[in-house]
Image (cartoon, rainbow, N blue to C red; front, side, top):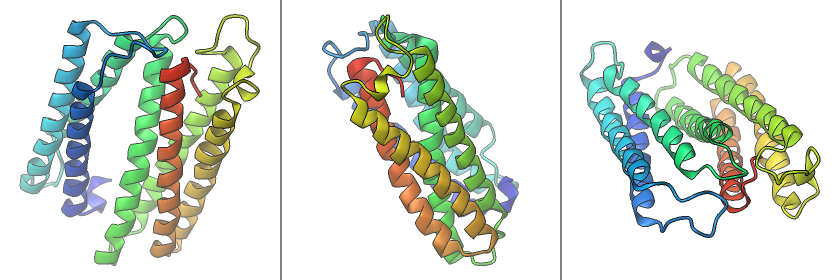
Length: 248
């Protein structure tokens, strides 16, 4: 629950989300068209709509900081919901615009949302772990919930990995199920499975148990490793999707 954490934590995470949104917008407007990749070149109208959605996200994220500070309940209110909606719209427009012959839009947007939830969840949990160093009387409940949520998201990613592999989503026509495990990109696929899915799943469960016992420094250390593994897996998964059209 939001009432179980401090305004400082909520406002800091909202501000970081805004900064990451700004970085995403600057990156989006600075990169060349994906002409040599597996994804398609989006139309100018979709590009514009996606960038507008990114701009709405970062403005709403920064507005959430003000709302959290001024609200009696410490909630982001409409600004927070607007940021969430704008983020989802951004991913949807990206998937629709970049979908290719072997990379349908619906699986791609699901992959985007799962990657964002895992990366954002890992970062949010890590920041929360640090908050206990300055707020020692804070209940362990928020960190337990955050770690459980992260474990659930990673479990969803494992399920998606199995679905993508079984149905050959993003693979060339005629390839058998789980062909990516033995294909030219097998090293990256196995690294994704072991390092950024199985590993973080175990680490998140361990973080839940250490948080329950109020070993917050240990839990935070586990979440550091968790974040590194999750982010590296996000980079690998996105890279394979863009370069070869493969979802993992």
